[in-house]
Length: 272
Image (cartoon, rainbow, N blue to C red; front, side):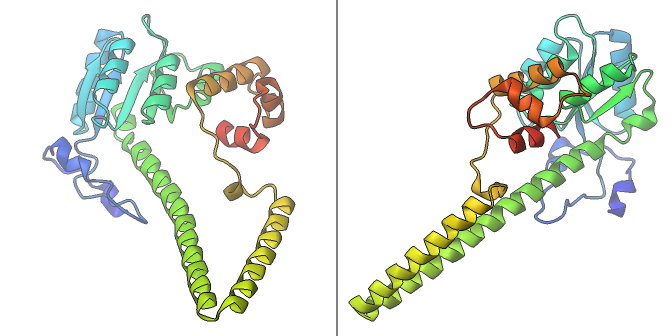
């Protein structure tokens, strides 16, 4: 990962950056990274917006400035896949920065960095609860902006890990199906007696699997995956706000949400 420390002097194109994270097991980072990082920066303070834009361009990023949160959300919706990270102010008149953060997280799943002169712990924690990957206190230094690329890499790294984990289950399923098919073909060749033996073996194996499932309720691979819709996420956020960050534990959040089929493990995973 030594290539992460290199920052070339020449500007690269966005398409050059687009191939940056094409990997399987590890995140491949070419020498030009983070040149060409595509940043959407949102701030209703025009002076602050221009200063941020200049600093980001000096970092060799491709910058799109926007002074209205609602306009920024529309740009993201109409240009999906055209940005790598969003840098947004917290307090804006047309749309609260936390609302923008929530919509981006639900619709685009992009890393969002919040920024504000308000550094109160309660405000920072609110940003974390809504899914901010970082919170920068104004005035922002250029050295801080040079490192925002790490959130893009970290997110892609996590996605790759999840994909590999999911792929391993698919491979196991394919192997099991292939073994079953071979076993069935062998039984047909042996006649009806072999078929009866195979069917009995399968019944025994199924009963054993059922027993294992009952005794291992915590196995995530045997539970249906919960899809966190906008409405479900809103219920989750309301429950957390009602309890307060200090008392927002999975069990109490689950009780307040009162959603059939939702488990404590689902809530704990979403809370993290």
